[in-house]
Structure formats: structure tokens, C-alpha cells
Amino acid sequence: MSDDKTKSHGQDRTRINVNEDYELRDWSAKFGVTPDQLRQAVAAVGTSAEAVQQHLQGAGGRKGA
Image (cartoon, rainbow, N blue to C red; front, side, top):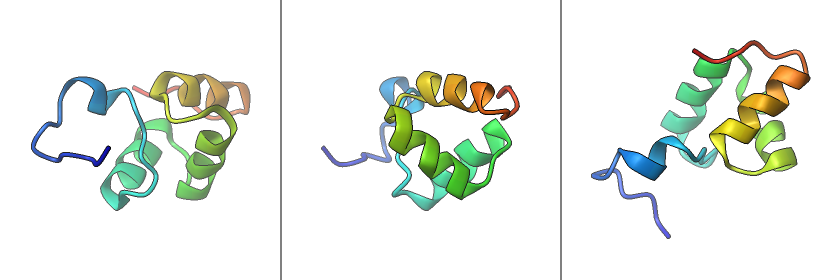
């Protein structure tokens, strides 16, 4: 399934696509981590934003706003 940029609500906000530069930048800023740290977290726990946030918090990342 492709990322439809005209539909930026709902599920789009619950998943992280590290192959999109703007998502990588925005999610990295939200979680206060580097893009590489975000990629590693997604590789470890999948694309769920909630799971990534919990993983990063457990790994010493700061809580997202």
C-alpha cells in the first residue's frame, strides 16, 4: 500500500514510514532522537508509533510530546 499524502489523518499518524524523508524528520524530532536511532527502533519493534515511543523511552529516549 502506498503512502497517500492526500490522506494525512487517521492511521497515517499511528505508523512511521522511515522511507519518507518528511516522516523520518518529523518523527525523529517528536521523539528527540536521530534519524538512525529512529530507523533502529522501527527495525526492532515495527512501524507502530506507540511501540516505537515505548521502545525509545526504555532505551533512554525522551518521551514524545
